[in-house]
Image 1 (cartoon, one colour):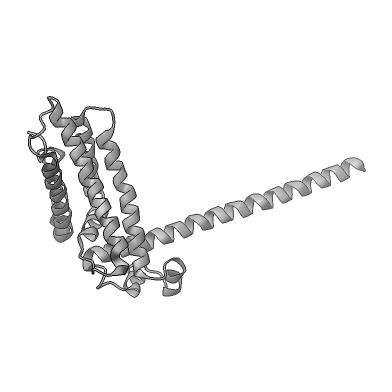
Image 2: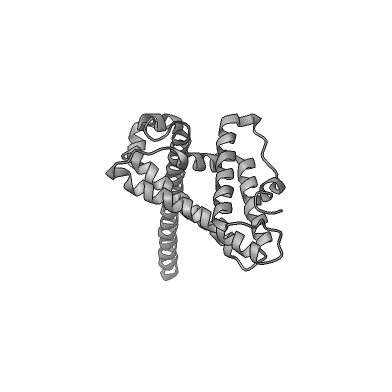
Length: 222
């Protein structure tokens, strides 16, 4: 009898354990679904901000592009400005990878190749890099509300240029074939080239031909 009671109690604990495990899996699945929805909204917002700019885009446009209801949209974001702020913040985080490439303890020429290969890979994969870049090029009204956006975009731009300038200085200091000249001017020129390439990709779409890594390297290396 005691054995049967023990077995029953053990089975009950297994049932409870199974229920807890099922609940945890359900919560994890729900969290992933929520994150995917959030990402889908931000991707739709980024596409529209790149195409039309912030002023000409509204929340209804973004919900339609993301293929979700307005109610679900407002569950994640109250305004298009909230989405824009988050996109700029994410972009600033992403550019830290570029800084990592420029400062790592390897040949500056190898670092440049890695940076350029990453840009080419992104251009070949989809339009996201071009959309990020063009979105940040769009004019923003000079209002108190946009002060944070200007600060974040300026910071993003400076991080990008600083990464190139750091790499150029390292390359010029050794026998790596880097072009001579003011590192800041060369860095700004390299940044402007990437901006132009991204804008052209969004303009030409399927007709756009992704430049080779060698072509992009040629901006900074003889």
